[in-house]
Image (cartoon, rainbow, N blue to C red; front, top):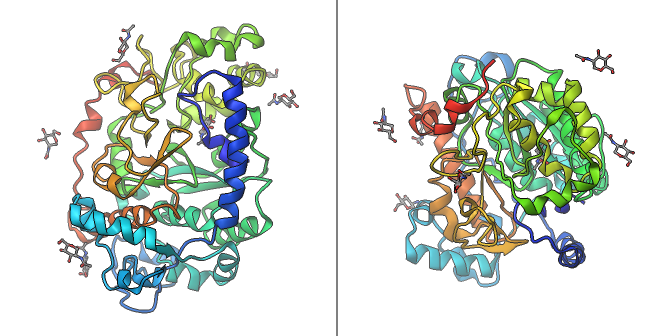
Length: 463
Ligand SMILES: *[C@@H]1O[C@H](CO)[C@@H](O)[C@H](O)[C@H]1NC(C)=O
Ligand SMILES: *[C@@H]1O[C@H](CO)[C@@H](O)[C@H](O)[C@H]1NC(C)=O
Ligand SMILES: *[C@@H]1O[C@H](CO)[C@@H](O)[C@H](O)[C@H]1NC(C)=O
Ligand SMILES: *[C@@H]1O[C@H](CO)[C@@H](O)[C@H](O)[C@H]1NC(C)=O
Ligand SMILES: *[C@@H]1O[C@H](CO)[C@@H](O)[C@H](O)[C@H]1NC(C)=O
Ligand SMILES: *[C@@H]1O[C@H](CO)[C@@H](O)[C@H](O)[C@H]1NC(C)=O
Ligand SMILES: *[C@@H]1O[C@H](CO)[C@@H](O)[C@H](O)[C@H]1NC(C)=O
């Protein structure tokens, strides 16, 4: 079950009993959540469509209007127990600027009102007519020259909540990037069908060629990633690879991501941690091959194409994967190890001595994820205004000011049906940034100096 992938463990206590309890509890929660799930709203598309033309590429991909901007979330998307709440729809700009009165109102709004939404079945129908689907959902079928010259590849692992995955896909979709979507083999058939219909509407979005069932802690966690990476290597000339789950959302626009990736000049963003307590995960597997020193870390990565190529094709990586297959929780050691063993010569990997993720020396820009205080590295500990599940913060309305000022590319994680305004507002804010970029004559200014000057970039293996 995919939930198990997310149960990750950067910071979990070692106790197996504790683990077993959590797993039982999770199974229970997952079931409950699944039955409660109704799914996300599709914004009504008929009014107020502004057509914004941008870039020089209108003619290649799309025969329909390149209308960018949505009207933002509307009261029609919510059903409230008390009509009073619909007289005033909470204002995202105010929530983002931490307006206390608005936050207060939004919290009761989100308690009193339920987010309506499209189910997997709705998506099956909507995406069966691609032209209408893409137009109504306002997919961005164009990009700036700078983006066109720097394609990015993404993988998305999912097993439920089509609506949330589709909102993520829509936010990161550009016609020249590459997307591999792995739908868990245990997913509901309607989820798979809906995703297939969506995928069929977008020429550069692919379903993983092999679908597996992801079981937490087992090699199966790593397998879909390897399938997607292998698939993606067949396509195009993308420069970087970013792996995502359906519960994440971008904090940067595609253009900003491109500017950031260009400014780090080939470096990878992979978290690292070496601690005695993790060694028990590896003991039973014997000595790792090729003198590789195992390193644990966050499973969310931003890595360059040569790294992906190495991971999938190089004999040393293949041997290492075989060794990992005998260890516990292999996914947390794969990229993290490859990235911190400079003798492998992987471009963009780290050759410094202190691999610990830290603000001063080695910031991790791949993902903003709030693990809480039981995490040994304070880097991942922030206040959480939403709720914690398996220690990880599920973002709430009060997290909006922080989320919108982070330097990371993506945030983890959101539940579309928990304080739904959180994802609604992030989506609106993100969409507005894109609109601003495409509206502006200078292609959208974005100061990359923070990224360019990260100290660890000086300690990176070059080609
Ligand atoms: C939300 O609040 C901002 C800041 O006060 C204001 O400029 C904007 O017009 C408001 N938006 C709506 C839809 O009321
Ligand atoms: C990788 O292993 C295969 C099969 O064992 C072998 O044929 C190939 O020559 C090896 N490649 C390199 C670069 O060592
Ligand atoms: C991992 O091990 C299992 C059995 O323990 C085996 O079936 C599977 O093929 C192995 N996978 C890889 C990639 O080595
Ligand atoms: C990202 O990729 C790494 C390397 O394959 C893998 O260990 C990890 O599970 C992936 N993370 C997610 C969230 O898919
Ligand atoms: C590595 O860096 C971290 C964070 O800056 C620091 O806390 C730790 O003491 C360093 N370790 C060594 C061995 O220098
Ligand atoms: C972008 O330009 C359009 C058309 O001129 C305008 O309606 C819209 O408000 C602008 N958006 C932003 C965020 O400035
Ligand atoms: C970019 O930001 C840095 C510090 O964050 C600042 O020193 C620099 O002046 C900024 N550059 C521009 C062009 O605004």
